[in-house]
Length: 225
Image 1 (cartoon, rainbow, N blue to C red):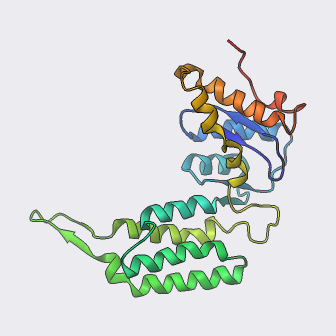
Image 2 (tube, rainbow, N blue to C red):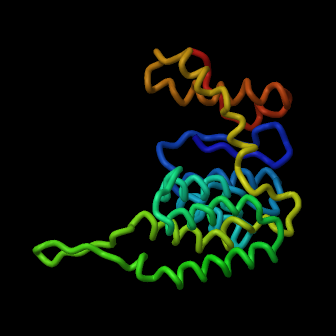
């Protein structure tokens, strides 16, 4: 399910059901939002490929903040919660420090230290294994992935710097679904074809608390059956 909302507004702007985050589906949603006369000064998302393509197609070079929490979770997935090797521990420290970066100067200093770590640990990053057939592979693939993510963070996840109204995460949106699991368990006997109806009704009643007069115009709700 794709859900869109404005920062600091409690109501849902738009919602739609899709099996995957296809760019053409997201483009259609964004065009509908634009058609309603909604003026966006920036976008915050999880940075999925389909979303990025759709945002570029519909809004061009609009500031696009990639959720810092999503990036941090991706780093933890690569490095682990309690890394044992000194090299991995250092990278984990870099990952955790992103939450403390509040200014461009701090970000620049952090990025410089990261580049220094990469330069000083080339042997570790380039270490590889081979087998009897001559096939080879990098010894620390997940660490290498973490480095790639860290290198992209300054440009992708610090777009919010200098933009006071732009949040650095999508937590505000994801908070809407905080009790979805409970509701889902209460209706776990639903057939798969009724899942879209359940999700849209969930959003409807969730938004009804904040904007009861507008949400019905913005969600295509299914009829009860």
